[in-house]
Image (cartoon, rainbow, N blue to C red):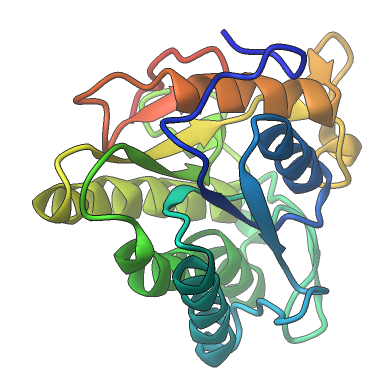
Length: 247
């Protein structure tokens, strides 16, 4: 596995894009990719251009920005990492959402916002960004998912909206991988579980005894997994150790 001190060499110097790159784990991924020698573009709600999943035009504008950078520099887009996500907080309508402990807590607004940020937004990213990946050579599109999105691994219940939206993301990733392979057989599209990371998203729900890792350590593990994905692994779901996660 590569480390920040011994970065994995890339195929040739290229471009990496991190969506959600201003968040806790996103910023750590940006730093890790820069340490590998890639030029990195970080895009999010507070960047210019800004990324806002409630407005598809912003997703298209961000993709156009990346396309122009690729054309201007001649650098291939080697890494696309989507680090956006929603678990708790204010929704687009201004209501507050928390993970549900029971079906009695289900409400349409929280469900809609979870699906918007965790599934619909990444689907729009697929539409506008995946065509920017090179048609030849190895390249990786990685979407941060969550183990709780695994149907096969769900023994505890609860967290309905988050689980279902991440399960939807996993299906979108698998489906996009099939289409991406028709454009470039060496391109990889995967879902990744980062583990429990010390960020604002997970802090309120980190249980005692649960391994909570710093963002830079989680990012280093994820980048090592991305760099070492074997041929034929496109469309799969892996944890931060590179082990398959059940669907």
